Image (cartoon, rainbow, N blue to C red):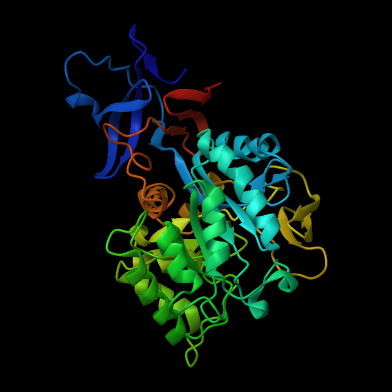
Length: 409
């Protein structure tokens, strides 16, 4: 075990600790039951805390458990395709084993009946505490920017469908990707307003809309959500750059509008910084422009995450994975990711982003999208979600809710 355990059962971790206030080169994280009891410099530990001796060699890095707000599956199981909650647990376990202690399960475009049925199934997982929310990526998306989704199943915005998904979602319907140019999305009584009404965060994505229309949608989303929002007062952008009109100096499109809003602190942009979806320079530039408080690192992972190359399903679409890259079996469109969120963190750091910023974008910022103040940071009173990393940012130990789910070797 990496931690020291007191007779009372408290766990104390010592190493380089990434906190909301900065990095403690020699810090302590003390867990008591399901909560974090104390975080601080080792030399400042209060009397009565069992301070483990400093380990020889490089210190382990201790960070909050990771929060992935866009994940379609892993371990051979995809949330859009599994028949029941038990099968969906395979995907949850795959990502938990690699440090993702809070996971939002994402669906893809499908017919209304399928979306409602899948949402009800995932709500069982959420109620059991195994996932922290449900994300619908569609069906109110642009056929011109469908990516790896079925354009034949895309439809006009429907406030009625939003409300039905929310009803069966039992309060776990967290966010939905929408294209503002699709009829029925914007305007009075539209899908965007309905999302805010039911407590789900609108996310701009799979859109061919102009910069001006995207700006209008972002303003409408903030107005509908209110200053705080049921979860967040900030709309998001679904995997920025991917699945949307490209940035051009005479046609800036949705990318420019989303970046500007994020830079003002009015939106959060998702980045699939896995080394496949985006170049390192793009990742580094976005962090430089908007800061980690407005970036949520995500996986967009599908069933093949943690699995060998081969053929997989993504909703109604067939996917082939070659050399770890998922593409549609019919065509070359990237069809989700195969990385874990910790892999994305490592790629982000390799792109030149400071470790503390990459961790914030994989913890505190996505937690803020969900409106969760009990996860996403190492601070007293928060849920005891802890990830202990080696010098290469690979997992040594994973703790969720005070329970060691992946013990040290």
